Image 1 (cartoon, rainbow, N blue to C red):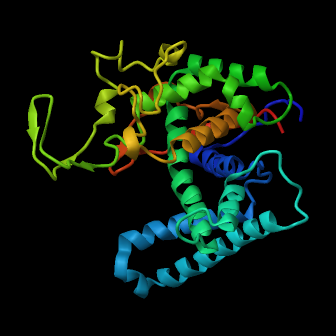
Image 2 (image 1 turned 180 degrees about the vertical axis):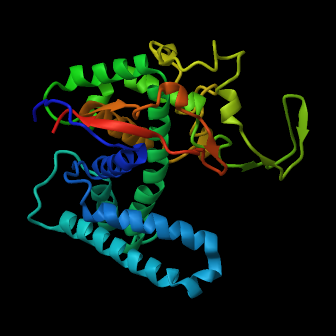
Length: 334
């Protein structure tokens, strides 16, 4: 892989680049194989169809019988099932070269063979786990990366510093792998700062109190739904210096982490019911983001400046950008 002169590029929604890299990174993190030709990969097409149809199916309910959505969804699920079966068959092939490190499917299939659970794990259940990994991981990951890019474009010095760190580490290799992200300390700080300022789940998942309790002087009855406002926690001036400022350097050398032990930063929750996809989600975000910053130079479209970047949020359980982030991507590495 060699560095080349930047090509002219049309302005595009950042999602057009982020979503495929997000999906490919989920695949890599799950199966230890980088997906080449990500724009034409069959599994990516299937994932896009399923995500789109599933959202419509949930929102339209019984009306799908009149729109033909049910049949489209059923067809997409069959394509999905075929894709997962191909992965399983490949992993069960006795002629398959034994990998140096097991992936998630290796572990699931070994559990299936050994009957490690009190119940018999089935192939269909394994497929369901894989579907959860892809569907749950891809959209929230892409939304998070778009927020990161939003902050970086608004703060060009941080963008240049992050890109320099990635490119100095990787050189002319042509891609970033998961092991490389361990050495990208500034990129990690950028992701943490994004989690602080714009958590993807601002109110986390609601909890129900088991018994009457007192929180901060307030009596909370039993069986009360309680929400944790992580968005407000991340902007608390008693905890954070200059809380409204995007300043990744605040995390350099700091023990503060997002894994549930530091309650000033809990984008994934804490305790026994913290998000089970936390570690994989962060790994995918860092891997996809590192490759996007390594392979492309990012600029604002003509006649637009960083002052035009907004931080509007769509209403919903997850905080997604209200208006598309339109950028110019100039490819640097093949």
